[in-house]
Image (cartoon, rainbow, N blue to C red; front, side, top):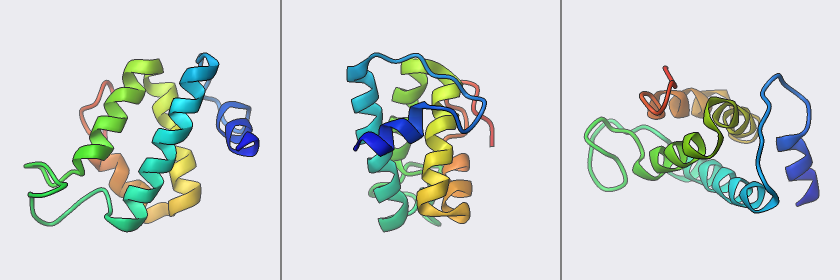
Length: 108
């Protein structure tokens, strides 16, 4: 667990986050949820319904993006995005990029 937090909140890229310890734990859980969603279900679908909204974006992935944006904005979203990319792969991260379209200042 410490390695995950260190990787997510230390250097490695230009995005800086300002979170208290409880928020860091929450972000860890949300990031793991995103990785699991991506691997098991994907972030996009060809058809709406079930876990996917009318734009074919995974509902829970969007909820997580909105929560991250509310916690610390774009820098936090980018940090989590790159963590998902490292764990779930380039293609799924591209799908997440589209699924998060319109959250805060996020643009795909």
